Image (tube, rainbow, N blue to C red; front, side):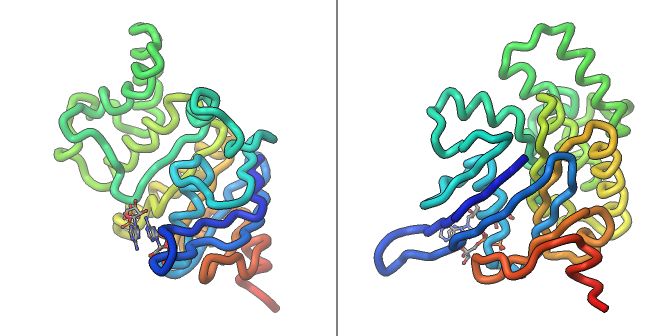
Length: 232
Ligand code: ADP
Ligand code: ADP
């Protein structure tokens, strides 16, 4: 589903150049929950942002569904990106828009007819358990509720991949577990491929099928979670 080949990212130039990733190869299967774990500064955020080209790799291929995104023109890339949803550590919601309008946002961007927007948003609101909070603003929600809005917004375009950038790092342990349960439910229900980055082992062990350990911009180990972390 997702194939990264020789992925390298260097920020800046000359003396200020900073290599964040060097020659990363990674293969993520359709329908799995794939985790990338590593310490702060290891390159996790750069890696996940390269999958939808939010960050342009300096070198290498980013194949999603067989297509190398780095070779696409602006228009085609925009089109393809709609099928790659993303959620963030700090939720990135529009603070002056209601829960309903935050979720409707990507649908309105693509000029979805009003009636279809309404049906879809209501469906998503009940999926993430926020039907009673549609008219609230982000500031009136708890962290977990904000992330549920983020998830609903990401699902609005019916993506086949969901990227999670430290999606539970700002949440307390109990809320983290409820968000992880929701992600697992979505993965099972829609067969959605999920890629998540985290510095928390608990996140990897509770929902990931396979994991890669990143250190200093390179993958140092990868495989099934049980094999990587519970060696005999
Ligand atoms: P992580 O998500 O694992 O904390 P990052 O991908 O954010 O790691 O960072 C990897 C390395 O790249 C770090 O050394 C970081 O300082 C550097 N880096 C990340 N983003 C930038 C940027 N925009 N400009 C320069 N250096 C960056
Ligand atoms: P988040 O909390 O959302 O993970 P970060 O604090 O890691 O965000 O980074 C915020 C922004 O700063 C990102 O766009 C990232 O690429 C950039 N960034 C991260 N590290 C550096 C760095 N060392 N120099 C410049 N920009 C950086």
